[in-house]
Length: 316
Image (cartoon, rainbow, N blue to C red):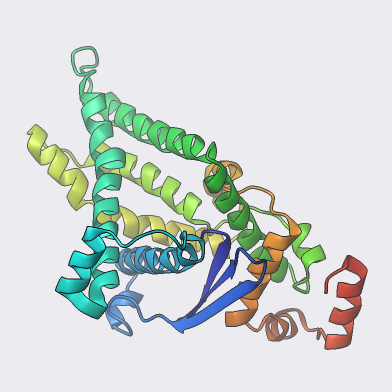
């Protein structure tokens, strides 16, 4: 988020944003998502597709919320804004968000799925082996993804987003390690997490290499269409892999997760304490971490202990 963190627990999500005046604004709402409570969302490999769509919708919604605190007051309403309000009235913002999300998906598919195919096809004159071409396409896809991440990380605003991303991971790791959720404990926790969206995207790239290696067609137009049609399949498989990675610590899972954890060094940065405070506010709005520590690790964290901890770290 822009100067903020979103946390989701079951059907509830919270967005905590550090406003320009320094205060933390927290919004908590229910989120049902696509096909809410439908049994199909529990079917392995299919559930990943719907979870991916839910993440896109919720991400766009919370990003819009966080951005409202940083829109210049003097910014005038554009002709497009007036047209959408006239046509769609109170649903204008939702329609605009939907259009924005659709354009984003189209661009992502074009850049990360279709473009690598066309670039790899330039080597057909030199590489006669179809298997090598499939691998080359996958390598190009991963390179484009990494270059994209590195390029946007040079932007000041994105770097701050990456810092808040780090704060989000640190909070989750802090709780999962059985530590009370204080600024001090969060700051010394890891900023990398196996269930991160960055790791998911890398799994998408790797899974696409495997699928396109074995599933082939001859006509170029059908090859492009195939890459688009297989996106839900790729997302479903990648989701199951990242679920497994988040639940297991065996050596095979660690090997599979290693590239994603490495890539998170680019998409997460060390946050400062004020960012961690925002992340903690987001967690506490949707999750009773004290009850979790009691149920999982068998000890209670009372308010007096928390007060002493805050005094030691200088928290108010």
